[in-house]
Length: 261
Ligand SMILES: C[S@@+](CC[C@H](N)C(=O)[O-])C[C@H]1O[C@@H](n2cnc3c(N)ncnc32)[C@H](O)[C@@H]1O
Image (cartoon, rainbow, N blue to C red; front, side, top):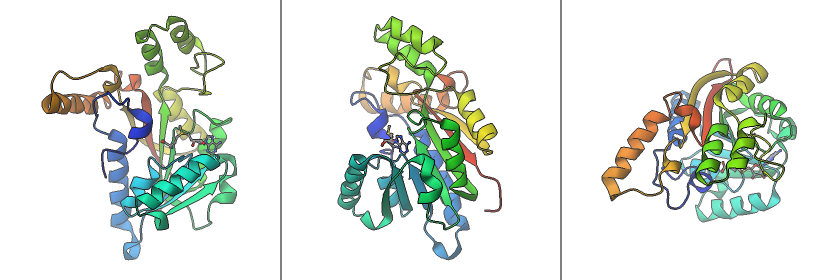
């Protein structure tokens, strides 16, 4: 699995590349699915709000059977084109629909081994209903991977950009928004994501990590490869170390549905 996962939505072009802790968590999860699979069956991935395929296309390239459910016809058109270009069109199913209607869309095969909700909870009307839908679409013993914008990183980002009034609103607004024009309906902290997945969706949280704790704060590195490697190693450590973890641009949680795998 390559470090290109998730880059399209996370990285500023000038920012140094960080170790992708999310890609690593998914890779480990899928290795477990493959090890348990009967008859070499391909892992089934359901990517809800998968958009243009930032995660879905590389996962299909790794041999997964991926269904993307997204409410945007435009995003799905880009997804189909990217899947064709990558030679994985036969392993990517694109379905236009809302997370609220996931139960009607899911193909009735007992659920997916891995369900992604990356960059989704910031935009849905009802996050509790959304995480419940993700959980129900997961096969017993399977995993749900959620990636959501971190509210504290947004505060720091606004201050660094000199937008102090917006930073204050982000800090005090219960939903972590900077104002009415904010395209995101909410940002979350680690406790909020954990509560959603455990209390509201009945999942067991196994990992909580910060995705891009430091890299988005570094405008450029003094010299190439070794500084990049040092930052990547530090990033990985910070993503696992509260309270630095909780300051990440995005919070990643891997949670499991109970039951026999
Ligand atoms: C920020 S993009 C994230 C794309 C991709 N998951 C990623 O991480 O790169 C959010 C996506 O969620 C989709 N979306 C928003 N609300 C949705 C809903 N209620 N049901 C399904 N998809 C939704 C949008 O169309 C968009 O493609």
